[in-house]
Amino acid sequence: GQQVMQIPQYQHVQEGEDFTTYCNSSTTLSNIQWYKQRPGGHPVFLIQLVKSGEVKKQKRLTFQFGEAKKNSSLHITATQTTDVGTYFCAGPGNNRKLIWGLGTSLAVNP
Amino acid sequence: DVKVTQSSRYLVKRTGEKVFLECVQDMDHENMFWYRQDPGLGLRLIYFSYDVKMKEKGDIPEGYSVSREKKERFSLILESASTNQTSMYLCASSFGQGANLNSPLHFGNGTRLTVT
Image (cartoon, rainbow over all chains, first blue to last red):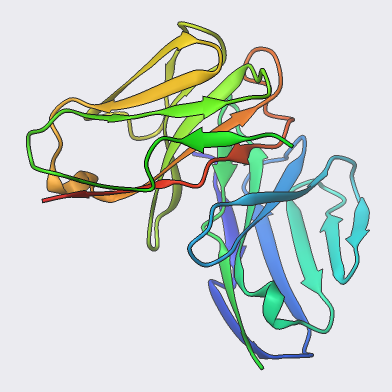
């Protein structure tokens, strides 16, 4: 069946270092959504990418959607302790359900 | 801002009890969802609804049922709670007709259910 794989599963960085998480789908996606879940919190929508090759920025966060619309990445420049959490990607499946990656948990050492 | 409210933050129930988890959204969203979240397993869809009185099974519907009598309210029911249903339950809603998956999900704060 359709799958969305996220790597890495965990990442520890020093504050100020960069961080990247990758999302790879087994099928072409019409769009991809990114969410952030703080420890003890609930997933919060960050952004949606729709176009092939699209790049969007939110302050220190850069989101990319691959040319083939099968992969995506989230890059954080100069991480801060406020970036701690789990980052999920999700894309529409063929059966009217969102397919979720398992998430990348980011820990930031001050 | 969209608000999705789950009735309880923490809940402790005994095995065999009937459990109701309530979720209300205030943005007139058509679509509502129930997920459970377990360490290492990510978000798994239990049921979703794209209209009043409509429901569809998600990936793990066994042991659960749902009710959507009003547009703003989506209830998850555990007919006979079991210990393997101990989990974090997340309700979400989104805009769009016919289970449109192009709209972002708005999640409630979650209910951490413990079944003993």
